[in-house]
Length: 639
Image (cartoon, rainbow, N blue to C red):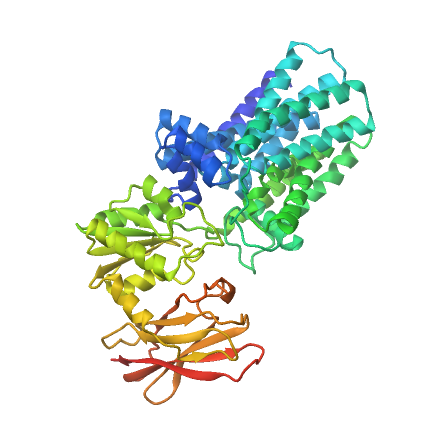
């Protein structure tokens, strides 16, 4: 085959993949994380600098390049996704080049590129308005340049010349760029470091040590400005819950994401993930058996194995021993290694002649199978539709509360039609920060006064993290009447309240409450509760209940409340058990002396008879620290 033929085949392969990807171009809204990058693509350079150095822990390169791209191509969802799309195409081109280098034949690159293109993780990255497609492109092309540099000037000891300087400069530009794209880029550079370090230890030479030293020094100097920019900041503070993730759970998460992408995989799902894992593992002995006498080709296999195993091992260690922040997409460096291993293993079947074709098709089919499952996305965030709905139904005198302030990027990118505040106003999620009673009242009062609000919308996405009591809803449902919302918005929640009172009314009611009961001997105290519905509730409807608590001297982690509905005949028709307030908001987080809201939206059973219904709490301890006892809350009428 002439040199031109592989080039044309590579171009046709990329064109085929491009056509396939364009046929599945998503029309969904951006989800929250994507709105961050989209929002800053329209902001000033100063805003990007402040966000990356003072607020979030994200490195800035993707923000910078996406802003430059948006300046030329616009900042629509389609345009911003196109940036990731072309980064994905560059990644596939790099995989073809790297596969040819490490496998000694272009077919390794073609098969590896097909394996990557068919994976759901690559499909996720290619359309995600975030850093991952750019990170993949930088990783694979830095590996291509590094392989050429090392093979020519460290393994074959070619005299240092202008090409060496050019290769060194390009590698450092790509490698340092990777560190400025995502913090897990360090795992990718660890692959390079271990591979080159292992080569140097096995066959030490002054030339190899010199090249290794120049590479290390260049990367350190390139990243030094960012270290200085972040000096004094704890970039981990509040970004993840305390604790550790067990290695088996972490590894399963990373493998499932590689196979299925950002999808909800049910427990009874077919074992597609393990089919792909077996395919990756089987590639290693296939290559060894085919080329056991060609030791130089083993170096390429070693690099592919390192690219697969080392990032996974590093991530498993990080979420167990450093910070329990588990996300399957962080395993992106291993996706390149897995694709290369599959390419090597399938290329090793070339000696089977005609039989190789059905085997290749079968292997690639295994990688594609998760796409056929059509599992729902983890984040079905219809933010665009939510803000479009508000814009279409807004009236003079409307205002908006973002629950919480982190949604400022969504409100900014999708152009909220009404003035808004965030409650709490924090721009970055902090798992140790909680909205409190007085802060919620003051925030709503200030919004009403500032804009003379008659109606208030709420847009919420994961608002329970910093508002676990759901105080925003609790305040508005007390001083306002809920208005119908015509449609759902996935995991984004939109509500609207027409105001009939001021927050002061809730304050006066709650502040006058006296303790009714206490978990013995010195646990949380119950201060009373009430039903919000003033009119009879139809069967099949919802009754809203607010109960108020205060922290006790003793933290009782096994304390539970059972809220129940009793019909006029004395029969219990509904029971719901949980800790006071919420599962994620233990008593250790309750501020002493501050009222704590525990609200309920209870479905009224169809079988409950018309007439008065009693709402009752039963207080009990999971380990039997005291005898359970009932507490009457309030009554309401069922029509």
